[in-house]
Amino acid sequence: MLRLIMTRVFLGCVTLFAVTLLIFAATEILPGDVASAVLGQGATPETLAAFRIELGLDRPAYVRYLEWLTNALQGDLGIAMTNKREVLATITPRLYNTLFLAGYAAAIAVPIAIILGIIAAINEGKWIDRAANILTLGAISVPEFFIAYILILVFATNLGWFTSLSTVYGDMGFWQKIHVVALPALTLTMLVMAHMLRMTRASVLAIMSQPYIEMAFLKGLPRRRVILRHALPNAAAPIISVVALNLAYLIVGVVVIEVVFVYPGVGQYMVDGVSKRDLPVIQACALVFGGAFVLLNTIADILAILVNPRLRHPR
Image (cartoon, rainbow, N blue to C red; front, side, top):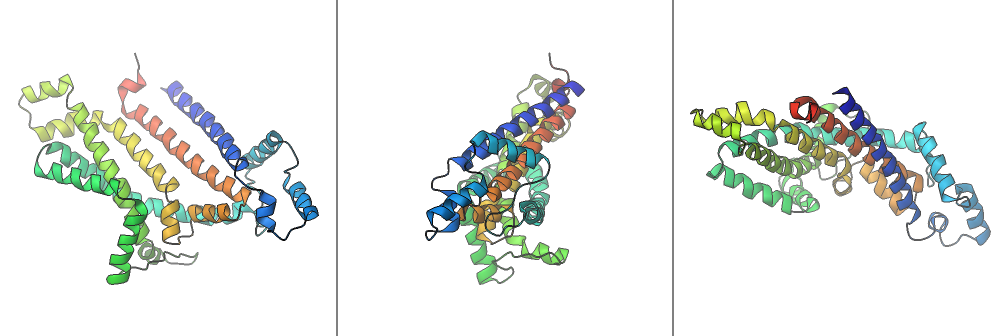
């Protein structure tokens, strides 16, 4: 089992290395000239040439990549081009805000989605199962920014229960922050809960076709007990994978939500960096998102190995 876990960790590191290559390559092929975008149209050719040398753009791409990767491994994410501040010092509080938002949404979405998914599987074909399918399909089909604007219209504009701008600051109290971040958290909850509910239901029903489940039914066991005692433990591995994938989405996929609600997170910081062609900021934000996605998927693989004996002892 230890060998399997170490293999998953090694594959995660290889994947993260590939992500760094893609991040650097993507920033290299961005259209336009970085120096011209930062300095503006009034910059002289001499100023542009000097700025390119300052940014290291006169050196080969592989040299700049190795330097960036080495610095990132040492915790140095570079200096922002626009304000000359360290990217790490700026991105750290924003990462905390993004993780707070993701944790807020996950604390609501994960238990509700798993419980409702199990209930839908127990009542397969009944009205509660059909209602869950219709509601989850509707939530998945609607774009996230549309859900966000609907919630702003109803709960902020018409009812006045929450604020439309989720601006937080360092000395804000916990419950005050919970209230301010309620609308973006509710938007993310509706999105990930629908997907997790459907995948939980599908995972449980896929196990229901196994021979040992049929034997349990032939013994006269009630459907509820068969699902909870026999099907659910064997469906834990795919459910863990789905939960980890959606948790990764809560961190990586918050860009649109943070922009809509003007939430000071990593996604908003990345959008600002893209608009200003600030390459160190773009690379740092993309690295944070990629690292979070790879880390959560690696943890999901390890947990799936721990809960599933067939993965611990492959034939």
